[in-house]
Length: 272
Image 1 (cartoon, rainbow, N blue to C red):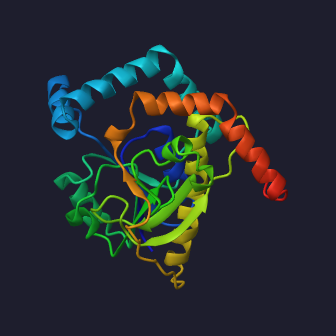
Image 2 (image 1 turned 30 degrees about the horizontal axis):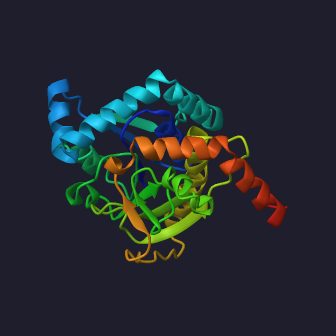
């Protein structure tokens, strides 16, 4: 079977997922990077998407995380967990602009994948998804309880660390709304902080993704269960603001993850 991995950039987490899936047979990687817009257009887009007040708040939050060094610490933690993954030499790698662009769709039609594996892109249109008989997505959160954006972060905020993990589901144009193939909780370590937690979700998600694709490619019967969207909540990008960041950082510094891991290991001593 022909497998295409469709990712939105060459950022560390995207390379990790793509390189893991590329260990399977007959895999092509399509990097459909986001179009680069002028600063004024980005500001207008953010204002239209979030509203002026939220757009300004998000810009200030990103600036504060960078100035304080928190952004660099999270990136360093992510790199410590994921390493420096490289695409296998036997994998064909293509680069396009825009996940739903005519360029990307034309390339996908040329490759004619049996399975399309999406990760880390904007919402993929039905026109793009319909090119493959089977389209999957990896969500670094445990659906349906945690759907949408930053679902590695919100369980920390809600102190529901047992809901940190990943989901492989049918990819649809609805946000994380497709039928679920498998979910799996992440395995945390006592010293983990926000960046590392995201990395743990990527690791367990990549293994889960690979297992599901292997089953489908070998024509094993794999059932996907429709999501009950009345369960849990859909989190949006605009919801992650100053107070949420401060609460999570403070909770981790006071032992949120350390205590959770120690309690979990005492209840399940073989889990580690």
